[in-house]
Image (cartoon, rainbow, N blue to C red; front, side):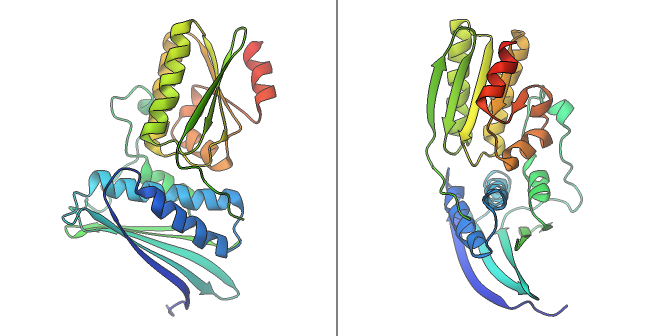
Length: 265
């Protein structure tokens, strides 16, 4: 196979510390913008890069405690592609040994991780995963087809109404963000609210740890026989909710007005 010309290349090494995946996400967004990808497609690239980094952070046990990334814009005939390589020098895993969890068992399961690789494959156009005793490499590509700035910190606002409470989340929902949303939800439940709506209009990126926290909120709502809805999801986040089974146990709405109408009925 002929080598594809590299138009632009950026190398990045990240120490395995909390939220360092955001640095990789910003580089991915900038590189994706060169391909004139839509905002939704850029979100998909960022989501995939975040998950690849978290996978390395949590499971690689890398000797150098780093994850190494290469971002390259390639020329593919008349079009371009963004090729991202995420590499760690950890313990690796057996080829073919990864099996993504099933949504039905995940909602009630004690462990809600292992979704990252499955989500990466659903978000990118090409994904190649190789792993052995020297480490793991994830190579993913998004083909050419604008750039939305991301808020790193999460802001939470609550609107209490007669029978329903609305939680507004703005920013990146990671483990800390997910806990913040969950804490707001549990506080409202303690106040007596049994119908909650989580408005994600201000959220462009969420990782699987953040989704796990939302799954716990869903379990609590099932336990108290309450109603839970989400509105204003990006297509990427909606896809993740369906992949992880969260959409099966809550209601998703395109906007707040339709959500309030349905949940109040």
